[in-house]
Each structure stands twice: as structure tokens, then as C-alpha cells.
Amino acid sequence: MGGPYNSFLDLAKERFSLRRFSDRPVEDPVLLRCAEAARLAPSACNGQPWRMFMANRKEVTEPLGDVAFGGTYGMNSFAQKAPALVVVASSPLPWTARIGQFIGGVPFAPCDAAVATEHFVLQAQSEGLGSCWIGFFNFNGVARFLNLDRGLRPLFILALGYPPEGLTPPKRSRKPLEDLAKLL
Image 1: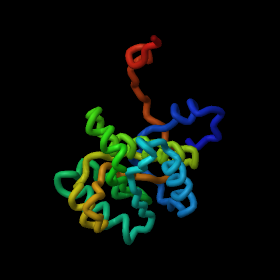
Image 2 (image 1 turned 60 degrees about the horizontal axis):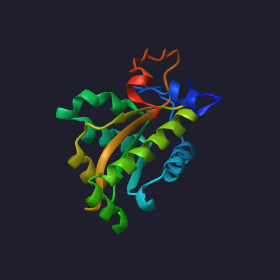
Image 3 (image 1 turned 90 degrees about the horizontal axis):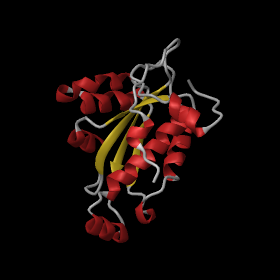
Image 4 (image 1 turned 135 degrees about the horizontal axis):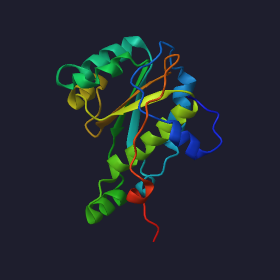
């Protein structure tokens, strides 16, 4: 895990959802490079309707994890052991994108945030980190914990860290390419 990669396809093939992490901390410069990759992601009308809140210190990750993954959301409690947690929130769209969203019926803000999140995840993979993208957590509790403005809405949490020594990546099953993509 962790490259070097000869191609983007090699990077994409190696990435999987990591649910066990070593104790090695995720350094600030690594998180910032991942955030830079996310910043460069395309978005409708260049609105960049997302914000990322990155925590890599136990005094933040532990209480955030307790809020996010307690009770009903306990199926994702593995994420509480991650050395870093990244909350991705959507923010309001610029008026041009709001008009396009209204006419086309496509929810641009979460789509754009998802593209940025995937840029973050793939940069993390290239840095030797593993990640797990989580969409089931206490949204309201996390918003309160982070004291988010009314216009910001938590969408995803990334559990992020280095894989433990000797980890064997799981076998993945994917649908055949011809079931998912057609040349016209």
C-alpha cells in the first residue's frame, strides 16, 4: 500500500476502504496536501460548495468520534480508532449553480463535495494512507460539535490513517466493466 504508482489506474486499483489503522499519526502537511488535491476538484460554476474540517489530534478525534459514531451509529465505531477524521460539509452554491440545479434537478453541492472528497481520498492513498468514506453518522451531533454555520451541512466523514503492519488488502468484487460502461 502506498505506491509509488505507475499510473492513475494503479492508484485507483489499490485503494480500498481501510477499517483498521496503525497508531502512526497523520501529519499536518499530509492532510494539507490531501486538502489541496480536494481544492483542485471541479465543481459546478466553480462554486466549490464544500468545507473540510480535519482533525488529527486525540483531544479532537476522540470526542468527535464519540459524537459521530455513538448509539445508533455504532456500526461505524471502528472509525473512532482512526488517527485522523475529516468531516466534509456542503456549503451554499453560487446563484448560477443554484439556477442550474433548479432547472436540471441535479443536487450540485453534494455531487461537487463528493468529487472533492474523492480527490482527497486518492491523494491520501498516494501518501500511503488508507481511508474509509462514511455516510452514516450523527449529522446533527457533528454539526453541533463543530459549531457549523447554518449554511454548512455535514455530508461525509473520512476515517484516515496508515494501515497496520502486515495488512492484506481484502479481495474486492466489482461488476464487470461492460455492465457499468458502454462505448457509444
